[in-house]
Amino acid sequence: MTAETITCPTHGESQFAFVCKHLIAHPAQKWHCGYPEEDEPWRDAWCSACNEAFEREGEWNENNEGEADIGMLCGHCYEDGIAQSVTCMDDATGSAWVQFLQTQCEVQRVKQQAMVDNWRLNDYPRWDYYQETAQLVFSGGEQADLVADVEFVGTLSTASHTWMWSWANFSLLEPVRSRIAAVRGFGEEHDYPLLTVPKWKADAGDGWHMTAVALHVLGGLGVYRAPSDNGFIFMVVMSAQLRT
Ligand SMILES: [Zn+2]
Ligand SMILES: [Zn+2]
Image (cartoon, rainbow, N blue to C red; front, top):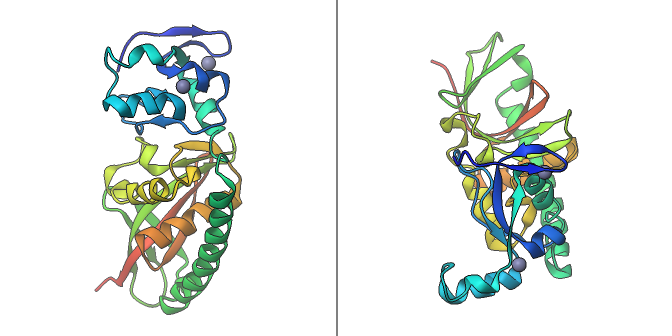
């Protein structure tokens, strides 16, 4: 991680990324950028117009870098800015998304009911999850303990009212976030920005919606929501078996 910082008028001394000035001025549009990495949470980003120059060369080099007017954006301002792009869909994509979400929420409801019934989840008084093994264990019931293989979808903060995808959350252990990038890939394929922007303003309903999408993309039996320090962790139950 670069040790260089800038002083943001809003956020003070901060790390920064290079971002085209079109995005800095008008963040509510598509951001062309890589995905967060542990040592580089904010990737350099540019708008669709600048992206045409980028794609012509396949990289930024001396032939095209003059065409992009690049500025430095503080990491916090970056997060706020890219979050404004989540609703940027053309009309056709927007209505396809609403329809898709509605369908998947209904599928989730049906699958969930079947999982709870088939595995008698309500008969277990206790549950615990283990990130090291990506397991959710139901115990304390009359029948054998139930061990579920889970993938964390994301976390909903009730403090900051934000959703954060687990593919962007490096505080989670690898075993619970090894499959979730497929949901981001699905978002890329269909141009659904809510699936590709790491963190955005959200309420509890959004957590269930994103989890319904993850259930669709990853497959799985159902979903689960567990309380966390400042909100909830949403997960997909990939499979389950009784402990013998
Ligand atoms: Zn631009
Ligand atoms: Zn800032």
